[in-house]
Length: 149
Image (cartoon, rainbow, N blue to C red; front, side, top):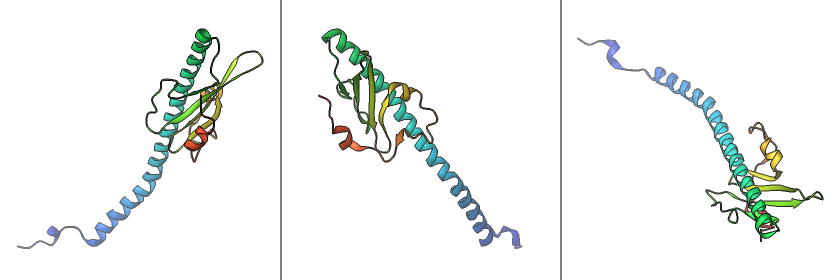
């Protein structure tokens, strides 16, 4: 005996499922992309804080051992391997009161941080729309314009 209900899905039912899946994807993909971008910015911030800390330590060691600190530290001179696509340097300026101020320039392939001092770097709040994260990135050429010696 032949039953009419055992024939499977109709074309209309399959199209309805495809439309629902397409709508779900249209909503989900931008959210996933935004989350991935925020993760990259957060990683850049954490890496920048690590570089800044290393530069402060290196400067203090140079002052104690050599009597004079350098005015520029790149990633290699800080003993930080350029993991991934990070490029950068930390510039040190000395104020009239002899207190050093550290400014970081750090970039990956999609974002960069330019001319941020340690206080501003540590106070970075919401990564989402923070104007301190530049996009597009400043690039290798801009970082190397004043290479550290």
